[in-house]
Figure 1 (cartoon, rainbow, N blue to C red):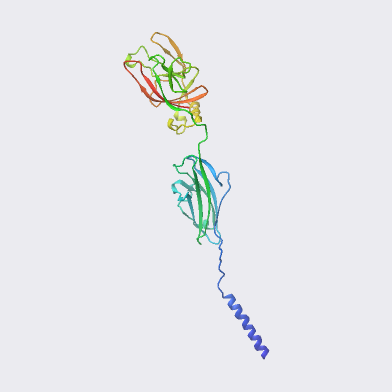
Figure 2 (figure 1 turned 30 degrees about the vertical axis):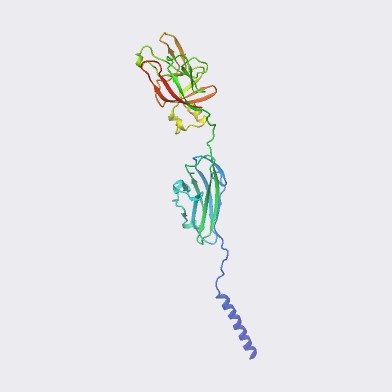
Length: 316
């Protein structure tokens, strides 16, 4: 009988231990696994610090992975400021961009995003900007990656000369009528340093209106009229690379040769003669192994002398 009681007591003790073991609290996770964010290496995307040409957008691909909790949001910053949603898209605009972006649906368990960013218009060459991408989960845990973007100059050869010059009526004072494009200095129309010249006057017309307002080339120079319809967003003011001037020359309109006739009947051959020029006309002259971009800024006509002149802006 005693053995039976002892056995019964032992069985009760075992059941008590099992009961308390099975009814205890669930274990507490003291170090939950947080979310993970990584740049994806892809030839079409940046995944490390890089130079980006000024005014040019760039793209990154980021992979978000959940840890012990689902993903909730993604925040994008430019420096210390949240990036304006007007300056970036996610998956080509397929996802409505908010900042931070609320992650929903199956994306909560992990997702990869393509993000295209347009840097600030205020950035200048040499600026370094940090773009950071931070993911959060429902436990409040976060992870972050960032990339440093250095603003780089547009490729090409910078222009070295930007100034104005005055070209006078060829029938005006001696030593005028030509223009040295290297210096913007007025010279005689037959001077060896002249690249372009004025065609003088039409003696058959009244003095008040006999200036031809035409320009041609001399000394082997070649001139074409710029056809802005063949160029993208072309503006004299923004041209800062010699390659742009070359493109304007290559796509420009060739000019026919002509001549200049004095009132005494002497005729001088002139190459690449323009139509009567007007303010805003653009030309490119090839001479001295350089390409010169010319804009007509003023056409100044006189009625009682031959001091008529053009004011030209020159870049090369």
